[in-house]
Length: 411
Image: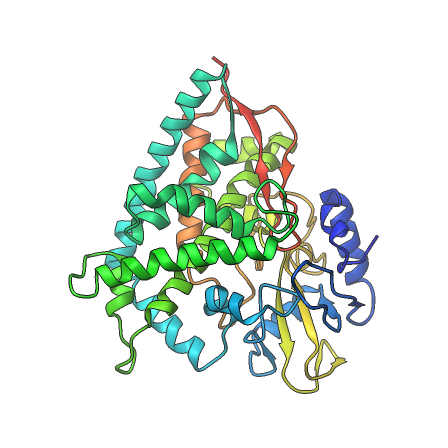
């Protein structure tokens, strides 16, 4: 089944999904599919899929021809109330996108990034200590995702945005709801849209409240830098800051969470990869290869601005294009043995942080650092960690997620 508009496609075993992508890359043109049906959303006119590495790169580098402002994270057109919460950088075009990205980038000065990297080291140690305690209380077993992969990025985000301890459980819950797709573990099957909006409103309200608190008394943190940062005399509104925070909770969380989880699973499937990394914990190519192999975000959407072409194929104004990163990252014309987790792969022009262009992940450097620190800790401080069950995958067409991965620390 190669119907990318059928949500059941995204539940296929990974090997079947990647085989389907290979078939699509070998097919001329840009295949068209009907849009999936989703409660609360109007059904649109269908979409085309962009599966080859060069074509994804072409679309990403040309925002004047392929825009993000009509929706980047949903095949279906989002209602206005959803854009209020989820309309951050990812779903904007120039000049608004340029201004907000410049202000956001200015919040991450070299000094502040250096402090965040120190925070990564500290948080990783705290997370692993809690995981050891969990293992001791549970016969050596624990869930890698809930105890290690998920807390690491979200605790860092909470630290950098000044979220008080009393509100962090809310951030965890709301973030999971937004990332959940239609997974019944996190959202209501009757009205998932309402769950997303509730979570978005919760995160937005929290950040608006905190932004107001540093308006007159700024702190030395990322939130204060966002509130007081200026480009050409203009500042971000509190709603723009709230939307950026939601983006951090989603994009800043999901790539690291799933890179760590997929990486541990990949090294379980291929023990030679674990041996390679364990022998050289600082291996510089390893994290990017894990991100390529995992492709934590399945796709992003672009909309054709005017009649043009993609890879020589005519496309019409208004058509929706799905940039399928999981396919581009296994394009055999770019990557030798693309299905293999080759931790020494170099060069590695993967698109796991998005393809190059104005929407390339702003936090890619920090995400690499987070994942690198955690993998080094796992390889050197928990070398005996073993996977003891199959991944429990997230039911989502957008996120290539693993909800739970049972592991054990032998006593």
